[in-house]
Image (cartoon, rainbow, N blue to C red; front, side, top):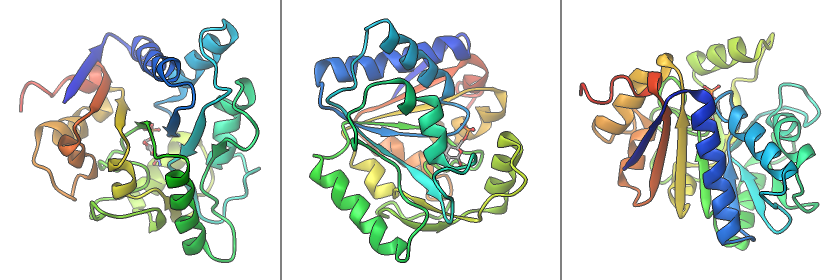
Length: 243
Ligand code: GLP
């Protein structure tokens, strides 16, 4: 795996934004898989800056986000729809209808999840998938135990995930279910870029990338993918050499 360690969060965010910009430059109609969470916020800020400076053009690109909470209205401040608008979509030039976030509302979420898979396939599949990593090794909202061949579906969130995310976002409450791209969906991406920062992620990063491949640590399956870049700041990389 291509593991790259940067001095600090700012440097890693810049490097990650550069990888996305290079992807779009080499293939303007790239299909991007996008992630939420605090980790990629700096990368999105850099991309907005690069767009304003004329260094990246999203006009032909398409995006598919990883996940959304069940029952979450897209206008809810806690929703991932809203996160993406505030951090990226409202500030750059994706064409109308070219950005996608799974819907957490509707009469038949299972059918909608299958439709999401069909839309990704119809767009040609994901060229570059961005990921963060949860404290328990989850990617998207694929919690420990998620089958490696799972597809977009409704998932139950662990108590730890709900409470960590609630604290981070200062939300009073959060749903205990989500719609998430599956492990199989993520693994089908042609390239994957996982970001992690901070000392709090050091242990799970080392378990995921230096430990055995196991569904107990969902991100560990990325070791099997032929084209993964892991972008870390120095604190998150702290335990990588000791295992
Ligand atoms: C959420 C998201 C994940 C994200 C994770 C880590 O649970 N569903 O996609 O990677 O949080 O979040 P953070 O980047 O805030 O640590």
